[in-house]
Length: 199
Image (cartoon, rainbow, N blue to C red; front, side, top):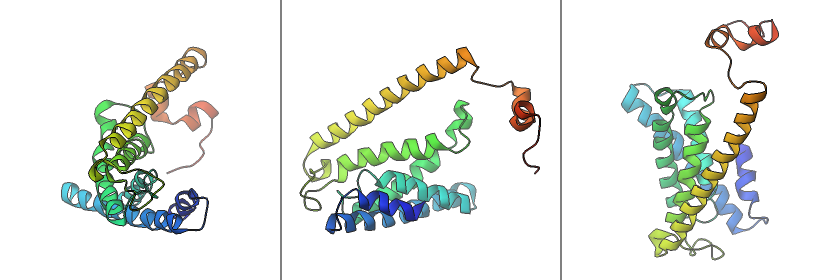
């Protein structure tokens, strides 16, 4: 995934130029910084860093740097990655407190990481890095942060409303949830009458 993300971010420049190289480099440093900050947070709060934590931190960094990759300096990319690792690490346990299903930690990693990355673009973007972009808040343009925050809010509203409509339709037609007993037994057995794997 990490390797493929280089094509995703650098390829967005649509040319083999300095912007693509910057996006490539920023992707690397932000991802490494996020993996590092996640395992440091794990180490401090749980006294044990994990490989799953490093991988989750890396994904958080990939997600967070995506909107900013071609518009921020490498130092800003490191900061974006460091913050993303800690924010996402702290966000993942929310599923237990709030009681929502998220087996792959998508809300905590992709959701929070994406929100942070979009907002961070509005903070750290610089025309010294990419003249085709705009300065962010830290470079004298608070309006860019407002634009980014508005985009985040609009995206969240659209996603929430669209998802709510789809989920309500599913709930009314075929049902959205299985019973607690079926969930504990496992859906392979309750839905397909066989066990796909045995652990």
